[in-house]
Image: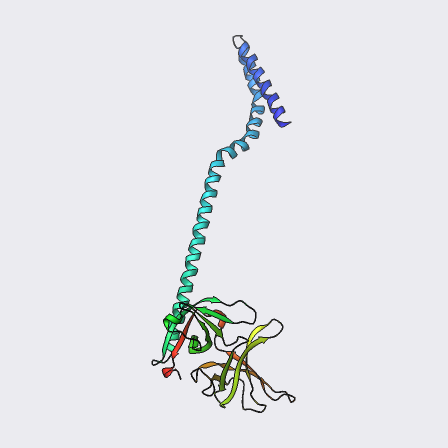
Length: 274
């Protein structure tokens, strides 16, 4: 409808122009042309205003496309820079953990520094895979240390270039431990806590009435265990006694967040770490 109306106006303008051209030799042609110009001017102005938005769109279409392409390129560069920054942060965190680990282990201890490459996602199974294996001297049963030289797990499987570590809060884990202050022995076991199944540590087989208190340190035991004695594991988080039970219910809080391990040390010989 709008296009038809515009076409009609153009035909009227064209006809008016032809009439003005035909009458131009006449004496009164000047006045007629002036009147025709005055009559046509509002119409031509309205048509110009109606056509202007479309003309602007066509004029700037190329610029919009160019800006879109430039924005896409900038977004790609930002994503690449963010990825590089994230990688650098991870490398820095790994380096800091490795430095702190080496500083915490005794000078006489033999160890292998290793990076965590995989975490076991299975419910109840708490394990990691490290990038050191049997060709590096890793064997089953060796202690694996985390930040602060605290025990985080034991080598459960060794392959030539990698090893699987069972964390101490795994449901299959069992470590001979002792409460440092009272020298009360117990068995450190992994499990879950609450309906959410959050990994948890507990100290089993501690008789009711034992002198175990919140905040006491728990270390590996020199008796009946294959691990070096005196490796720090965590501290007593809570002690609960029930009259109908034979043993205390003791919750252990580890000093290390096992979910944030990036670097570990495989203890090949205890040296001064005992």
